[in-house]
Length: 306
Image (cartoon, rainbow, N blue to C red; front, side):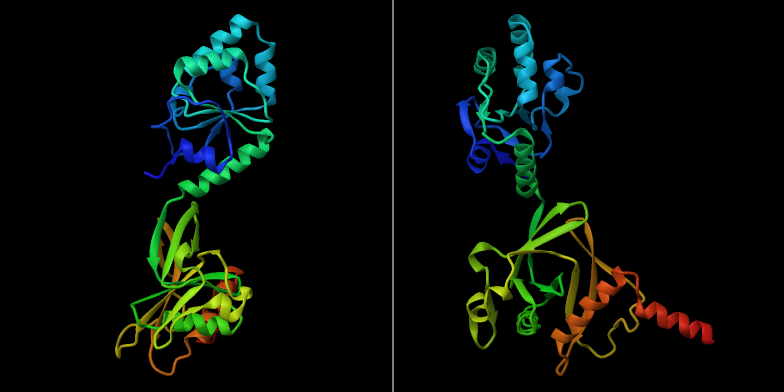
């Protein structure tokens, strides 16, 4: 399972360590965050179910409530709170912990941290950070390009012409995201983001030429660091008698990380300008998303005439 360790979290979010508990085995595997106002009010129902995974964030309101409690009450509730398997407790706005909080953290070996960010800002930063880090991801052999604002993933066997098609699209004003290997992550239930591995970003392999740097050759306007994957174009060798969609009435999908992505298959043969076909596919896909389907319109006209 994908997770973030506590040392990674502390480093990446620039957190200050107030007390370093036993955090070697802490693994954060959810972007859900808890603000323990209810727990400080002594309501712990359901708290134990997923508390070991959630970041615990204390803001100005929670601290103000704690400071209004009598010392004995505050000590009792903090002891009960820190007795749970908390991954860490983070104080926002640069707030200082109460003595009872430090005592409870030391007693149960819970890590106590601090940030100068205001609470809502930090929660937003932490959620976005964890969503990105914990997103399911795979590596896919293919080429990802931005065509008219759509992320088009070109798939096909080696040597079929994916890179050459992408190069022609770049010459026509579109942008390269990744060549050869695309790192894909699932950032929402129906949304995939593709990017290039860091060590091959902006590079392409063109058979007969070798490696080229797209950014150096065509400028920064020819590249993108990441792009959503909206359409998959499968390039297959043309074979006589093989099935090929002629009208476009049937929709085809490909499953990537449990997300159904629209897919079209283009037969490849000498003389076909694949870049123009991919452009047309992207424009047609955009029109369909807006509610216009040329194949359905023609089918209705033919049906009405018969």
